[in-house]
Length: 228
Image (cartoon, rainbow, N blue to C red; front, top):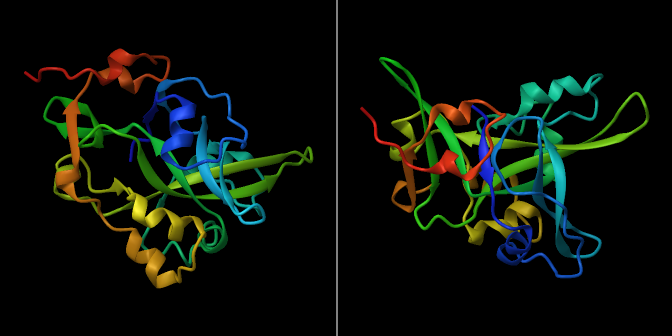
C-alpha cells in the first residue's frame, strides 16, 4: 500500500474528539496534507497508571524493540491484520501497546491504463477517523528511546476495493475503549475489530498526482479533480 495520510485538523480538536483530558500535554504538530512514512504523527494511547488517554507524537514505521537498526521501521509502516498476533515484530505490541491514529483522510493509488491515479478516502461526514495502530519502544545504539507505530490493514470494503486490495482498519468510537485497553478485550474480540469499515460510511474522490511528491504539502492536494 502507498503510505500517505492527511492530518490537517487542529490538535485541540483532536483532543476533544478523542476525549483527551485538557491537562494532558498538547503536542506541537502543524497541519499536514501529506504525511509520509517515517514522519512523526500524533497517536492516541491509554495511560493505565493515570487511567486516561494521551496524545503523543510517534514516528510512523514500527521499530521492534529487538531491532538493531531504526531503518527496520520503513518495512513496518503497515501491519496485516491476518496473523498479527503471531508475527514477531507485532505480537507483543498487539497484546500490550495498541493505539489510535487520528487522520482526516488517507490516500490510495488506483492502477489505470495510463498510470496510477491517487484518491483521497475519508469518512462520509469528513470528520476525523481513527485508524487501528500498535506502537513500540526502541532503544538506539546511542541509548536514545524512539517510540514508533504501525497502521493495521485488512481486506477492503466495496469502496476501497475499487482502488486497492487492502485498506486501513478504521475503528468507530464504540471500539476505542476496548482497542486502547481501557476495558478488557481478549484476542478474539480484538481481531473481530480488524474488519472492513462500512463502505456507506466512507467516501473517496480523485486528487492531483502532486500528492505523490512528499515535498508538496498544501490544502490543494485534497481538492477533487476531473478525470479525463
